[in-house]
Image (tube, rainbow, N blue to C red; front, side, top):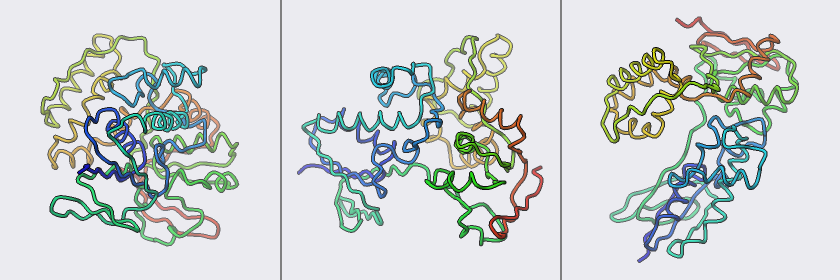
Length: 350
């Protein structure tokens, strides 16, 4: 009997699972791959059509195969030679790369067959030796991988709820009509100040938006820019497969940051050398440690870890100097729907 594995989610997480199964499997099995929106390979993140939306990691670190570190750079050089390994390439090109890699590899392993189902999975039930996965039909598999990616953000906390139904409110910052509707407004508000906010600003700037943009965030942190830093990197300081506790890791990072300052090393490299170990850290944190991190450290970590290309940050600085954007440190209290817009109430963050 051929084993069957079901993969729920067609974005980058599901695609990398499929590609690595194709590369590594030496025994027969069948893959049933589900994606409700029929966006296999690219998902939401890499389906953007705006070439101004850049990767926030250099091309040299974006290979989808650990054992082939130059895989993406080689594809990029062959197809888009204007970009180098040092560049932050457009996200849409990375989506093309993932799609092209799947198209090349999907029929190369004689042990594997792949069935793509463009339907929503509405139920998964564990039976004795199998799982039953339900869409409009029922499928059976011995193993299931849940690769759903990031969900849409929760609606903002607000006393009033009517704003959710307004055509001028967008829960999804990448909604296909958001820029078309926003550029005709005189004043818009973005809730949150991370990398997604940068993407929205870039699209608005690209479409010559001339109104005012308010950005509300509890901490008013904005991403750091990737620095062109000539200073040497810190030496690797993480022990492979060691179980670090959160406080121990925080102390170690602070030590390395102080060392980088006194020894004239690149401080951003402290975070960069941790990158391969992050999934292992998170999986092995206790529930209490994860809650502590999300409550106290998440925002500062996001600023340090999820940096933006300098080209993107230059646009933000330009909009700041033109007084187009206004960054507000505050917590939302209420969003009231008005004729053609909203009245937004917030309190000062402490």
